[in-house]
Amino acid sequence: MIHPHTELRYINKLIGYGVFATKFIPKGSITWVLDDLDQRFEPSYIWSLNPILREKLIKYCYRDNQGTYILCWDIAKFVNHSFNSSCVGTAYKFELAARDIHPGEELTDDYGYLNLDKPFYCLHETNSSRTKVMPDDLLHYYPELDRKASEAMKDFNHVEQPLKKLIGNKFIDKINAVAEGKEQMDSILNVYYDRSKKLKLVG
Image 1: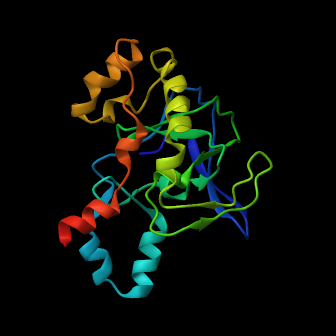
Image 2: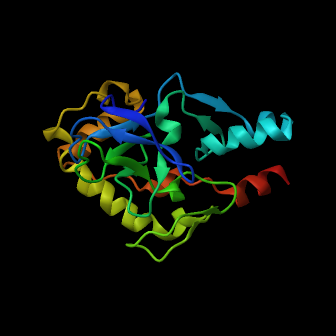
Image 3: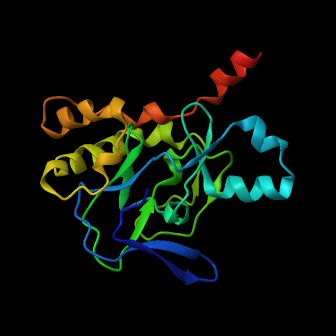
């Protein structure tokens, strides 16, 4: 579920739609959390589809660390990519505001932690020399993502958290301990889908 203070807006013909803040969303707020309405698809189902349907579905899905395709039921599936994203993922199936997000500002993700199946070519960003997201980006950039998430968690207990009640039960004790400074966050590297291990198991 996406943060309630957001809405879908049309950007332009090239980009299409994006998700924007309707009210101030402070750093450390949960901006998205996986919930029971999000749809999960096994790879076997994806590849059983007509290629036209498969392409459309994959476009809006991400993959978890088991390789399951997940389609967000709400406007979260329209969140666009940025190498300087306003949101950052965690190992706990939710994302945080990496910085203060002001009304009218777009919520963006770094697609590098979404386990893409193929390279994603991006529009040029003035603050980055990178032009594409690779399926293995998480292996290379997780230290910076971990740093951003850890910084955001410092504000976790000091901001309104309308989505906190949707955090999975198996994570809540860990999250409370991290927010209180008693434990360190687990690395976002935990969400990486290692295709090589999957292939070895199949073989």
